Length: 381
Image (cartoon, one colour):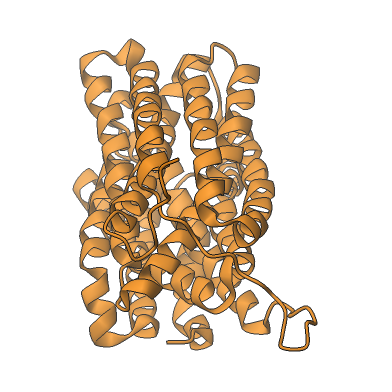
């Protein structure tokens, strides 16, 4: 039997990178497909919201289980088990002919995404610990590369073959996952189990400061989820561009997240994680205020660029602090707050859109993100 590569081995970073890119590709494809799915299945804002809620609830369950299983058996095993589930889920999204089948696909996608998200972040934290220098921003930056690629694929296919864009884009994401899985089996490193007992053998409770990190994750999770789920629809409705071009805003958000995350590790080394999070919160909040009140397309795109730039700075730092301090269990709590809000929070925005309008709904993430500079006090450098 081929030995499993070690955490300090040469394949640890490429394997973790591949997990982040693949997961980002699937979520980018899902998010940019929402305008097309809305038109193909005849959904209104409530229908889009229900699909997001279903996916979010399934992700919550999988995140909690994934964190504890990763601590017990190692993040490698959980990630390898979840990757095919995620591929099956996004394939189902592409083929879904009706709203009920879309919901079924959302269940599978949510379960796969929730489990792989916690395990890949814990794997990234352990790789960072063995390297002795920051690398989580790079991993999240490459998640954003995948996210941007998924959104861009949908946009290009919408211009070339609008009637089949969602199906073809989902098949691309599925094929990527099926090809990546055997590679990951060979190169993903063995990970370390994490115990939660003190020197006397008594269970250690989740520390109070972890809940503050969870509140921070709610803010950036809602901000990122709203950007990925509603920016395309906002641009379509407010700027009056054709529906097939609605994913333009998603692409802008993803592109600016890529740029800042690829630079993030150097910034963390120079200024510290707490300062980086504070700057990110201010930028993202400003971008949402632009989206809430502007109408010209160029100005709206500037606002979404600020959102992508700001949020791109935040998540890697919060997750790194949680994982280093508390392993998979604490990371699961924080990731659950962040990604469950990322996946399900836009549903809340959908109901606000129904009650008010799409621009006024943007005030909720704007206000929450404005509070991040205060919450950043809870972070441990």
